Length: 293
Image (tube, rainbow, N blue to C red; front, side, top):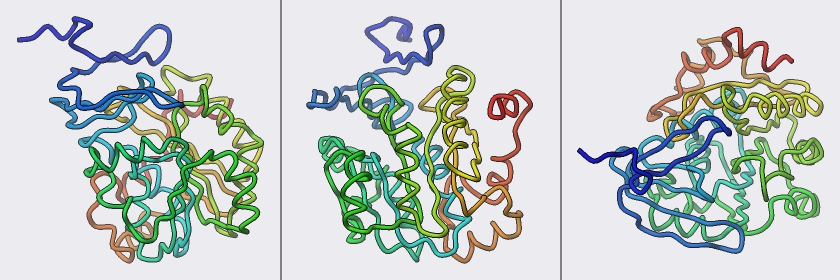
């Protein structure tokens, strides 16, 4: 058996300065650098095809549903007939795929800074986007999400039921997309039932980050509902949040969620159901303290 503790046999990702996790490298399929970031695509024994940016695990064939289903369905199930969504980031197409499962969805605008991410998804990650990147309801824009939200969408008078921040961690180029100002600018683009969904980080390893982001969201939105799920590729419990002035997914009872899943034909999901919806908003004590501090 190979010794996977050898550095040349594994990919290592730090979760903070004291802890991290590793995965077997498998076979490198493609790598390089764009003007924005370094990328790698691996064929791995455990996760199938796996995509990394700047040394951080982004998505994989085998576990993408842990992330994308929870990011999208927790807010959307609380809406009445969601029709339009904006994705900032999300060039792998996984979030768009989940949005297109709603029969009422008319348009998804996907704004990805780095066109190479979309190219990689088209070539290597069909199991993540399942053709969503070619769906005629998709409007793909390769540009800066900050500029799109601040300038382009207001000029075009665009309004969205859901704004999805499907981004890398709040460091480097993505840092400006996690500020209170940007959250408020996203809020200005929302319809009457509008909400924003995003990931927060790992509460065990990045508690300060999670606490700070929840605080910023609370300064902008009336209802902020963090929720936490184990993401295998990320090696940890991972935080997400739904933020809105108008909807609150935590108030939906189990029977309502069950009925909406049936009415909307969401019968091929691998993670999300009426029970996981209820459980998402039931926090152990240490998480209660973290998100309320």
